[in-house]
Amino acid sequence: MSDEAKTYGHLFEVDHDAVLREKFASGQGVIELQPEMTDEMLLAVVKHAVSICEGKPFLVVPVAA
Image (cartoon, rainbow, N blue to C red; front, side, top):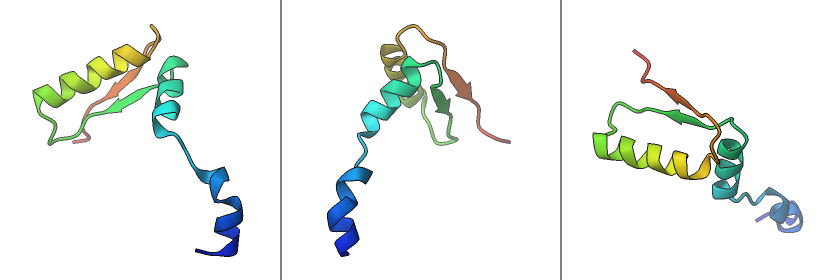
């Protein structure tokens, strides 16, 4: 690890869950569907999005053809 990484590494640590929650809570959430997603996976993702969006809309992007 470089000296710079040791010194400034803490500045780049990201709480991905917090970022995701903030995006959805601010109405900027996006679910990107994948071809390998099963119905159960899709349902779980949508339920999680609904639980963190605080009533704000979110976008569901279909699989690109």
